[in-house]
Structures are given as structure tokens and as C-alpha cells.
Image (tube, rainbow, N blue to C red):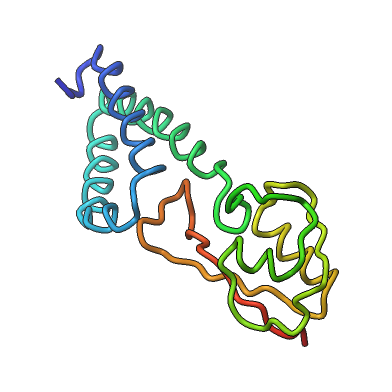
Length: 163
């Protein structure tokens, strides 16, 4: 089906789209198992250089891969993702710690922290804490099942005195 003859370009385009979304959204652990990928790419380049009809198929494949990877890169990830909806946008530090499963320093527990919305991103929470308290938030991340689309998963943080 995936031949280098003229007319096989739709199949290569379909394969490129599927590959692009797989590379963009699959966990990186799974992609690391595909250690033969560089050899496949090298074979594709050498084939394209040797056979004129293969060049068109490989160009179509490369163009079809790009959107899947681009969509994966454009997704909000890590500190730009929202942890969950909070009960209010203005909370005491103790409530914020309890809601977001934060650990660490609790000396300023009665300080009110105003967030930009009820569903702020981790980065917005970090900025609000640093600007409104003498503490800073150090985010905790996990790389299990990380992909180009999701980035490292932020699962909480810890409050520390700002230096």
C-alpha cells in the first residue's frame, strides 16, 4: 500500500498525519522504545535521494507530520495548565494550601491571596504568592507519561521563604 509509485501520495499523507499525532501526543517513554526511528529516518532520506518518485512521497509525509506535532506543542502544559477550580479567587493561604495540596512553610497562614480567577494556572498561583506574601512557591513536577502535548505534570508544590 505504501509504495513509492506515483499515486501513492494519499497513503503517505495519511501515514504522516497519524505519525504526527502519535509523536505529538504519545508518552515519551513509548517514543523512546522506538529506538529504531533514526534508522528509519536515515533509510527514508537515502531512498528519497536514490529514487525520484520517492521524493514526492517523502515530502507529502513530512508536510503531513507537521500539524500533529504543532498541535502538541501548542497545548498548555506544566505551569501553564490550571490545577483545578478553586472555591473563590481570594483565599487565605491556609485554604490555598489545603485546596492545592501544597506543603512547606505555613508561618503566614492567615495572609489573604488574591488570584486572577477561580481557575488560575500554576504560574499565576506562583506569581500571586510571591507578590502578596514573603513566600515563594516551588512547583513539584512528574515526568511519567510526559508527551510533547502535556509536558511535565505539575502535581503540587511547596512554600518556602523567599530569598
